Length: 161
Image (cartoon, rainbow, N blue to C red; front, side):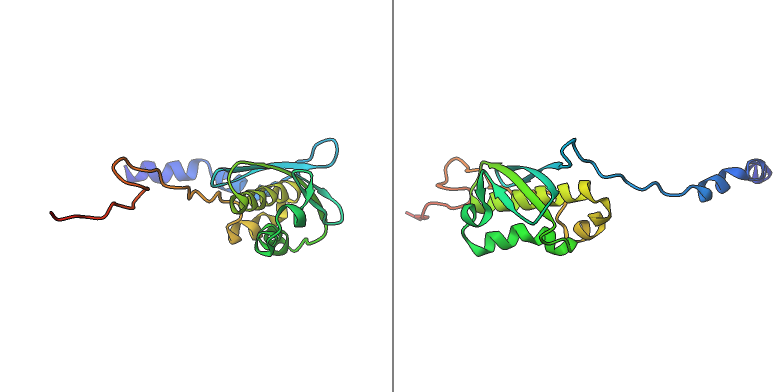
């Protein structure tokens, strides 16, 4: 039996050599005929459709400027995180449409969509965005309400008698 295993390994030595000689194929960027990359981002109940193209850094959300739609500076910072981690600030124009959820969830959805679109536009940026955790959908959602309780976990005041 041992001799069979040794002879099997010796019979085809070129299999290992072929695997070593293969060069890793470079991922190509995915763009439409207008030079844009499209991705969908999600967070809580919000869903964002994001189109990304080379430009001057203009971000439009639901037809409004980002600073007008997301008035809070924290939400503007959340959206800009993907660009700052990738090191490509003011190099891409973003057009996004967002539905569902509140402003915080919508900002997270736009960030997720921008990160995915950046990976499609420039595949070299994937490692930086992946290590920052921007390509993973945040699966935390609101816990459902249970019967016999006013909210998901809140209980009515306990009365012993």
